[in-house]
Image 1: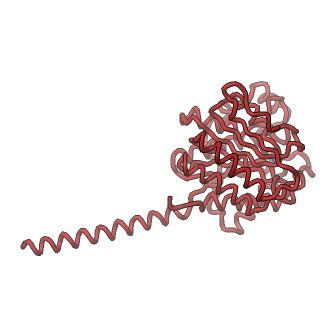
Image 2: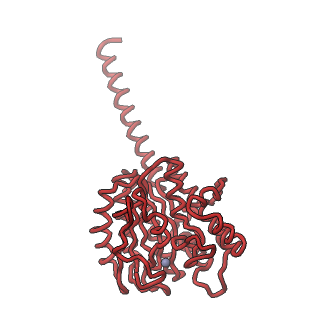
Length: 337
Ligand SMILES: [Zn+2]
């Protein structure tokens, strides 16, 4: 082969492989683009009923599923099917007396909440095994008021988000977890379990005048945990601008110092406008912006690792619309990074 032919052939191979690599990368980017969120749920959540007229009803989830279908986001749905001894993980937060009392006195509620725990643990595994970027757990009942009282507190039996935080730390050895709670009510149980713990940064916006009447701004943590509990009271009528200002001016600054390795969201949508149990006025667009702020932190510090868990939200349609707005950003935020 002459030198000239050799050079031409080499050049040809070089150009075609470059095109192939570009084509392959484009294909890969398109695959990733399609889906970065999993929504975990299960029909087991339809069983638990406090009473016929109770606001924390299966209709909350049914409505989310219907609107996901309408918005063609239902392709993100996955069934909770993990085989795990969830009791072992529940016991990292809750006492044996509490668990046994729930099993005896509230068997269906306990079963539903234990199933929600399973969903959260599956979500953590999916993210840590890089099967998905982030996860939304469409579960019920909520969990952020659950204490060790042997009964439900504010519709909650087990604190799913607290259990997920311990699971991340003990199974995957990640140390620093940020928990963001934008439910209208204060996440008193999450505060309680991590009040002295500097490995969990708990940030909650809520109305201190509402149930459970906790969450005052002077409650900042204790001992080593001092400075890692952030409560922000917001008044009735709070709109997007106000809560977004709090997220930008307080959460972003604290998170930049803390540098979380995993982010959990207590995604309560009773802070949305028109909620029968709340008096805030946050729009679906507002929840999109809040999600973007959390995603910005997640991309900066923890490779986008976010597990979001449904908490409150009692306007059946409003809760579903806000949840879908939130999921839309989880699934589409800066896909190509
Ligand atoms: Zn709530």
